[in-house]
Length: 107
Image (cartoon, rainbow, N blue to C red; front, side, top):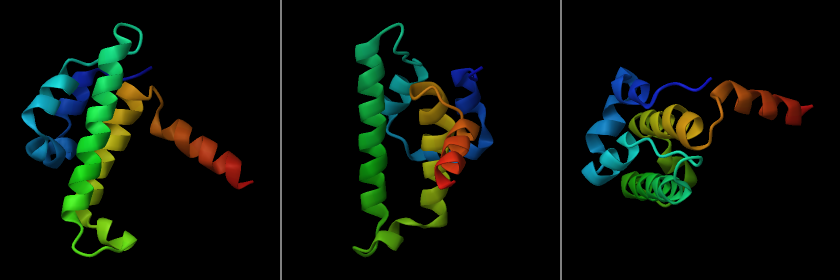
């Protein structure tokens, strides 16, 4: 049901995120932590990814407004890390499932 971790690292859409990602986080993510095998490593990877993404977003904002975060580069990296990494590998949910839940809540 879920893709192999190598699909994330080989997907050209993720190139920007992988180029700016710290090497220690890159290595941690490549180890493909899973909650079933090692919950502590899994949780650490999730926290490290979230921390890095939040710090990156903050560093890219030119002004202190919420719309300052919505740059093309930042949204590309967000898509890579949230939809193509966190969702399938850490949260174990597909983007389509999130969309279905969102649509159900709109009704």
